[in-house]
Image: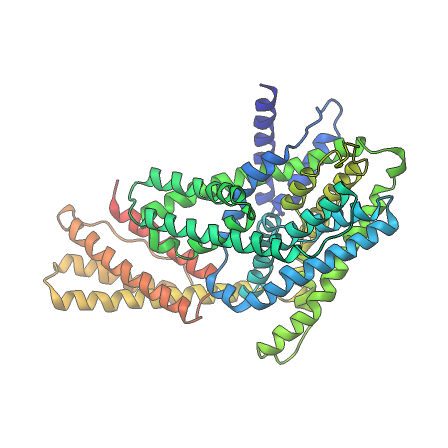
Amino acid sequence: MRSVGTVLVLVVLATVVATFARRWRMPAPSLLVVAGLAVALLPGTPRIGISPDVIGLVVLPPLLYASAEEISWRELRLVWRPVAVLAVGLVLASAAAVGAVASLVTPLPWQSALVLGAILASTDPVAVTALGRRLALPPRAKALVQAESLFNDATSLVLFKVAVGVAVASGTVHWQGAGGEFALLAGGGTLVGAVLAGLVALIRRRTEDPVLETVITLVTPYAAYVLAEAAGTSGVTSVVVAGVVLGGQGDKLTDARIRLHLHAVSGTVVFLLESVVFSLIGLALPAQVQALTAADRAWPLYTCAIAATLVGVRLLWLAPLSVLMQRRGGAGRVGWRVPVVLTWAGTRGVVPLAAALSLPATAADGTALTERPLVLVLTTSVVVLTLVVQGFTLAPVVRRSGVALEPDHTEREEAAARHELAGAGLRRLEELVEGEAVPEEVLDRLHGSLSARLASAHDRLREAGGESARESADGVYRQLRRDLITAEADELQRLYDDHRISDTTRRKLQRSLDLEETRLAGP
């Protein structure tokens, strides 16, 4: 009962803090970590331990899946080469640099320093996605940061397993089997996730019950994770691949009513899980610090040195890569702003914490791993430091860099797309009028509504509301309007395929069409 009460208190605390974060326009993960730290330092606060099974099995799959669903297929195809470089090369470089620095400035032996480097080598998809939702980054830059954080876990997992084997067995590094293990984790996880996504897509195409569809969607990330782990591959990679595949064809699997229902339910689940897990990170740090010995009192200095190493290595990798991407993209002037923003967006979060918590407490010979508490504290403190410092300053860095899309740009793109959709609806209406007899009253309503939307889009205003109609003509109107919405949805997809609008605009306008189609269905 005590654990249940603790969870309920965490949910209430996290919900309140996240609500104020949205009102104050502050990054919710950063504010939640600060709130967790503040609560943990209050006198009488019980010590809260975090189970690696809870983080790895209960929390991670749905959050990873939600992050993967937000990836744009179109942008992912454009950035897969730099993503592959970062997901492998940058992870290896970060692990080596952190391991070297940790072995020099901390009391950790080189084996444990290597473990720490492997844990902190990869950016966290949950934190990156949560922090990046409110930033108006260019589509390609946003896709690069999110895709890197999603696909670099296989590399860090291989490094972590090798490093843990060295630390536990006190042996030498065996890199011969690392390549095969990477292929097993990444390739096997990709295969399991893709096969499961195909099966789920077949089921969802034949499902018209919103409740059943919701259950299938909520179970999918857990099924991908459990099946992959049971097969000895990467559960994280499996969940990511399933989310990317299903997220790219979500509009084709269900109708508007079910999509709105899924959006509401999944949004609530993700909000609660993110709120609780980020507050838990702050709550756990003070209790972990209490487990340290007197020889580890300089852990704040160690944390700053490791965090600075991660930022420095990331900038050294991203600067030349960004120059190459800008030149290939035809940029007339190559600037420093893009690599700085991409560097500052690479935060650590839930995944490194789960890896650190899974460290065994004893070595192969049964002796205790005395370095484990320091590794755990350094991991959590680096996560807290990046979430707080980079999280609170990321938006100002993006604004001052000039990389962010201007609000006028987004409004113009959306208004132009709405204009195109309304024009497609009018053209479809003319085709329907020529082919069948339509009551004059219905025709006037449809034509008036679409004409109003054309004028509204031209003036960059929101969609105008329709007038009420007589009940006798209501059925005809609804049927024809649904037909026009289908034509507008096809036009929306064409605009996206022709690179005339971003994925963010496409999702927003598709949701508007879904809302209108659902309203036409009536109670």
